[in-house]
Image (cartoon, chains in turn blue, yellow):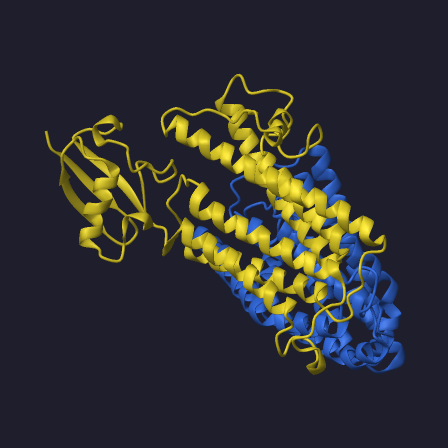
Length: 243
Length: 304
């Protein structure tokens, strides 16, 4: 009864009743299963790392350092998903997937990694935990879907947890970027000033502010899209069940 | 024999009675009489919801309908005529660039207001940019013949924001008090200028050639463009859309002439968009004409 979503996409677009195009072949499916299993495992490692570090230290502070490397590795690895869309083994939009993965990678590298001073902030823990739980559910969702054995619990979790995790993650992200602002301004990080040979300038500080502002139109759209998907996916299944 | 029409849309269903020799255009006018705000340009009529739109000059009895025709209606939203579209898109950059060239207040710092650059290349760049858009305006008003009458309002707003914002951004740097002239000096500027002028002339020649094609052929007789006596049109031997080739060339040479990265970025984005359009056009030509020359590529000779 669960529509086997053949996609490993960040968006929910392809999950609901996809009119199946050619779909991935057997080799591609095997590869995608392996990919999703590895990603699930990776984010589980991060989750376990966070819990262990908390138990060892006894506080929420500075947990970023304990999972810094796997976070960078597995979040950056998600760039492969853009390739999957481009090659066609995943029926999702390259642009949409690219945009979402890039925003994650941007936060991981261009903000958290680049501005050392924010790494101790609690907001980092906020978005990292949100990402971790979301990704574990999402990648296991794709894994089970590809194997045509999707437990209702996973499907329910995928379309319900976001209600809390999405705002949680966004809050963490925005607070982190906001915390980074004074340091970026002071050091002129990633900024180019005039005069220069190519007559170009870039102010990273302003760019970060614009990024924060862009959340205002984007976040509600994505959030309400997921809510609509939730209605479609979960209510549809209930209709089936009552027959 | 009277033909009954049932116009269906998501919002309303209507019944009209018309003669069999009525055209789609006449039906659209009829519909407009009942719904004042839905002028014909806003109406998209189809026989099949997933099918092609019907043309205004299609005659009812020549279409696959019986005594009763079911036509599907879609509201395309507010429309603007093509000439207006181009005026809006091109007048913006024209004036905005000049605002920056003359260093209007509140753009640069207070002591730089209404000053001018010591570099001749800055004035040259202004002249080139201005001439480019004046040429486009002249073409829009006098040269182009448009197959569709209108464009949706939303698209125009989006296009205008893009053109206006980008021209403001590149004008900002070229006319900046801290502008750095090209590394190879006058030689770089002069060579780039020469190529710019050639590309503008080329682009204009192609537009004229395409326009003549439409004039001679008329809507029924479709032909594809050929090289003419004008040497600029000889690019037709190699590409389907030499107007786009010349356009990219003009902007690329402008980038080199000003040695300005934002201009190069604009050129790059324009190149991507025009390549997409050129590929589409090339495909259309190749499908429609069996004798279409194999040597021709969409936009870059021998390559793309």
